[in-house]
Image (tube, rainbow, N blue to C red; front, side):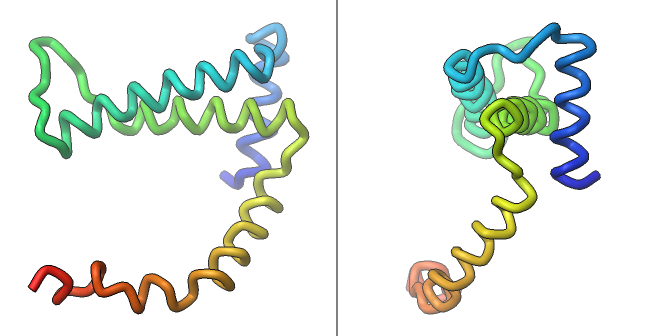
Length: 112
């Protein structure tokens, strides 16, 4: 599935099952909430926090929740994520094409 297809599927779902998009501000708040849920899983699965009794850690589901709300916000604000992603990748490539390669913190010898 492409980003364009994902945006179209979210739009179709919203119009069929969701009645309408939440406001942009509400979706930004929901995005913040979903990122918090993702952060909780990351802290428990990859960080130092332990899992609470009965707590489920579904990283894929939380990542997808974040993606869903991003797609909603893109749709309702008229952002073509395919085109935007291409432009963003070009920007990063031009700006950072040597930055990370030359970063001693990222080399195998950065901690020696």
